[in-house]
Length: 413
Image (tube, rainbow, N blue to C red; front, side, top):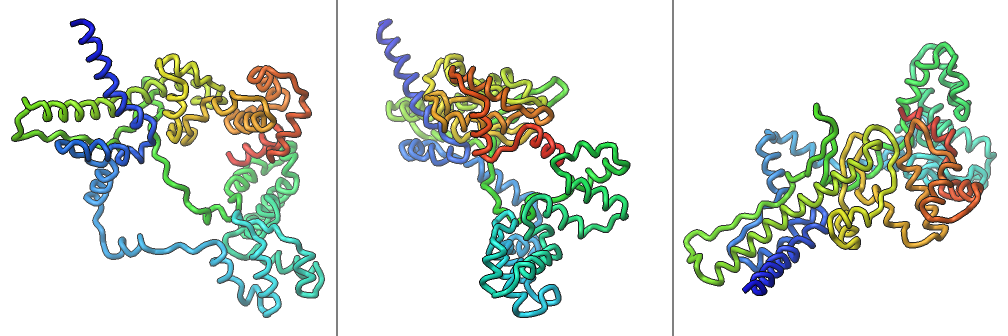
């Protein structure tokens, strides 16, 4: 009898787990799709999409006028379409200047920066490079402001040309831009703070507003401040609702009993998903508390989380994939809190990935130096390397030094 009960318990748990694992491992946007096979097998359940509920609530709250609907269908122009429309008099009065300007546009990247070779364009049109450069300088009068500039300094200068400010402040801003690498040494300037406020308003890169909108990310976990301190909450508003309808059927029949149980297992599996992610959120909040108040992320070990949840590390690895946490510092992939991707080896690629990861989540008030990155690598991988190797990897990744990053963070505000 006891053996039969034990086997029944294991079977019940296994049944719920069969539902729970795919539900846990899917991202929030795929939950409806994951539930489809279960719905097809059970004629007594219906699933209401959380996304559909949001749409209905949106439509019921909005008074859709014809103007509003028309506004939704407007197709936004690309950066290059906008630029082509501006290649015309009076800025480019002659056909030759227009053709050269079009060639310059062809050498502007998606960020709005000119990446071409002035000399090559000059050869193409059989003219002096100085003339091509003069045509490029006219891009300072185009929209978006800063487009066609070669680097961040020139981008800021293009934007400064468009501003109507007094001469003294203009000169201070210009001086700070030209001496961008040593900007803090001018903090005693009379207009320093006002100049910094202007620089922080500049757009970088110049074509930022034309970037294609990335896919909307719906976080699974919210971390927020309240009167009680820092708390977490599961984003259950997008969860599908499972409705069990057995009205008018004989619930004593074995087939009906099995389908009712299956439906309840599915409901339990959704609740287990919430509970599991809530536990993950709690562990992240506890271990990464300093990050949520402005510090840097500390690499967490996936195996510690797996042990706490009494699950296989591979299961937890799949569970945190494609899931996000939203906090005051932005929307962050859960996997970024863990060092799972670099535990397997000590190749240069793994170390580079770790360097990039450390810098990405460093304390912006105190950017981490190459020496400190070196110590973290030695602790993480248990290897000995020299600092210049870290410096070489950092440069290969296009990451500025700690002092320069501090200035960049200061400009970003």
